Length: 187
Image (cartoon, rainbow, N blue to C red; front, side):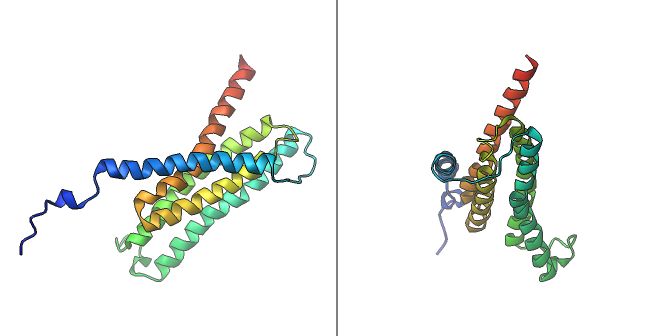
């Protein structure tokens, strides 16, 4: 029997795909807001007294180790996957679909980390000793976002939206806040 279904009818429509990603983005915004508010106001975070901008900058720099570990995890996963597969030669075009996801995860994580790194370091110079606890909270959120992005991407590329939102939106808020604060110093 011939298949009379048009090929496009078997694929999810663009609208349904956008709806899937859109709900993940909404969930990411709600999750980020809730996570930051609970971690900042309810969970006690005991930090050393960081009185100077220099101390806060050093602290923020040290907190980058956790997001950086997500980059390392991607590099290690790709290295191990290549070693154990025909893709050991990166020019052979022998990457599996799973390895292509890992490569995209690594690329996106590097992009996200560069923005996050600069945004948190600049932010740390505007925070006082009491509010500097926001930096490790944001670092943990970055890690959670990257894990969700990677797992979602591996399950279905459309499921990466939540993790992308958890990583991107806090960084975007920091970048705009940083830019506002820098401009307020000038004018």
